Image (cartoon, rainbow, N blue to C red; front, side, top):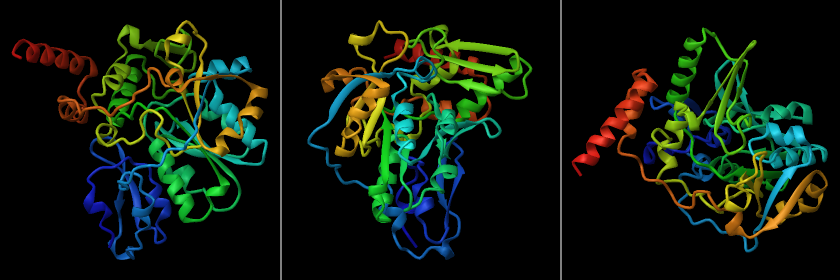
Length: 371
């Protein structure tokens, strides 16, 4: 039996070990902290082949080799609608369009309104892939998409840096890396589904809704720089912003309930990536007056850089120094907050986010007085 599951008590939750297992001995479950994690569901099936260890980017403690040349750009889609609907400038969707037109299949993330979760899916057409537009600030359940990836065909896959790192290791294992084009993004970390479900249920009760039909995690209705989440159900549409103390964003961006591995164990900050291209928000001072969205883009590998000229047809791209492209992005790992376990436990007990927020403020103030 593999000792992978004995050596780590938490991980990134990318699910690549599940698709790599030749005996279907591993499955994904929701942990009591609100994160998808792998478990060995049948020890008798395990043949100790070590494939789950070989593809695991969390388990791999080796230093990653950085490419000698990385080109940085600021960019946005020339299509106004794509740019507006996207979280930043729409470059990720334009990459997908370009490769779908080259007979690639695309694997990205959509929101599943029946399961109330983000999940990876497969698209064969540009129209189908429109569901991927916009960030989903929760952990994706990867298996609906990842389980359909094969050594055949050509694929462009979008995901968090840890998901992409494991997928590239898996693609090497099956000798199909040449068929894959990987895109990741500057990642803040993923918050617990305990937070998301609590927040969503609170909003449903406030407006007497059984479910929402459309969720936009980064609506630009208040401008690109203002974190605004919009929930729609029928004719009812409500928007909430960090500026006005939206509690989902307050807990998420305060790092109070991220996945454990998103703190000290993330290996992918700044320009550390296993992708061909990395995208994100252009947060630096140079573009701070823009309210429509600018993408930060890193063309990392030769395969990634080969798309620059073709993307120039559908996008506006301006080469920028790496320090400008990465300005405002997290460069170092986070420290685990002292209040994290208290927050997770409170969310598990269905605490009111409003009361929990007030209690944390009181505890922080009380702690500061006696420092």
